[in-house]
Length: 618
Image (cartoon, rainbow, N blue to C red; front, side, top):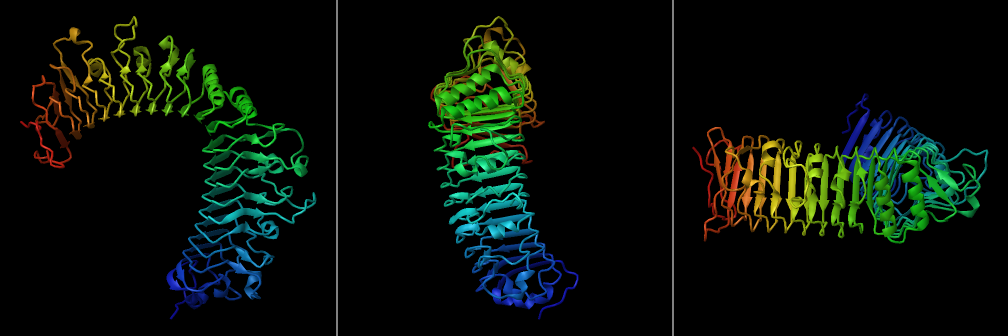
């Protein structure tokens, strides 16, 4: 028996048969939010479950895993409720309704249908084909629509069907309130807008995100592009067939937004074009260009067939117009011409650039001339197969005074990371990651001659994390052990893995100058990981003693030549002392230490490995 809840405004129903929905009809009249989850059985559309007085107050409707639902409303059936249902609906979400084919079936929607709708989310509805909005008459009623999200509807071919719509100045523009458009994983999507678009205005659109729509060839027509005066973010990624952002339709060239061959995007702050294998140009006509005067973030990962005109467009926008405004630059481009364009811009300098990421470019030197990126905080270099130098020439000309994070991945020709003067310049560096650099021999160039005898002192005062992986030719992490005395005082995590020629972390370049003070303290170090280091012998030169007051985790594995002795004192400080190697003593070594376990018997075996040098307790 159904109970009456006269003050209830939210109703959630789950795991019942569709025919049982009729039992809740007493609740429909005043309910504002309905959530239906895992409704089973035959229910081709949602309306028959409600009576003529139902749904007048409904503002939010969420349908999830409604197995046999084919549409929200079917106008071919003479339903009295159809004229008022969903007229006050603000938020509509439909997810995992595998039988859903369309929102409104039967052509012309009822008067007032979805006229207050602001947010629409359609996700993982695999049977939805043809168009999301198959009639311009339905689109005409969506005057308040602000956000559209469509995800994982693999059969959908277009979003907005505009065929049959004729342009007339006296008619109101469609979709003029739309602010956000998110389209993702729509494998068969061919058009966002199908048909004439002169009567559509995207004057309120601020965010567009299109991802993994592999049959889409362009995003906007010229008339739509000219209406994008509020657009702030445009992200397009992994759309294999996309060739252009804007397609010029002959009938539209002089309609909507005025003429002219330069299209202004006055508020565009973020532009991402990533993984577009067939991208050619911003426009499909070289007679047109675009301007982005306030661009702050630019991400490009483009193929060889990008045209000369697009390179010129980038130069005009980034180098000339947005040079002082650009904050984030991410380039991953195969084209040598585009790569050279970016590096040329770097030489001129971006005084306000904060993040720089370069991927898969055929570049040998990051900078050959004076380069000061005084605001740069993050530098990421990925798969630069021909990179040999960060800076070639006078090393002091490369200045990165505010750099906080440096990531270097897959730069297999890079032999040296820093000159001593550049290392000394990195006062704000907090995170250093170097992975898969097979030819890297030195992080700090020991052979570089500089006048300052004390460049090794005070290095990396703010460095908190170091991660080194698969750097097969690296023999020492730091050339001089004294670096640890005046630098690295904020180091918290140190990880070195699969660097097969590494012999010690701290070298003995300054061994001749050793004083009686051979005790080094890294006060903040909390975690130390050393793994699969086939040649690793000692943590530091023989005779030195390291103390780690804060160490919580110590993990050492597969370091067969290691002779360093680890111990813990009564204050639970970890001590490391280098010992001379003993001939014939080569066994797999595994240390595991966790301070969080209070018992002193916290050294344990894993995978049957023998503990050769157990931690020594007082």
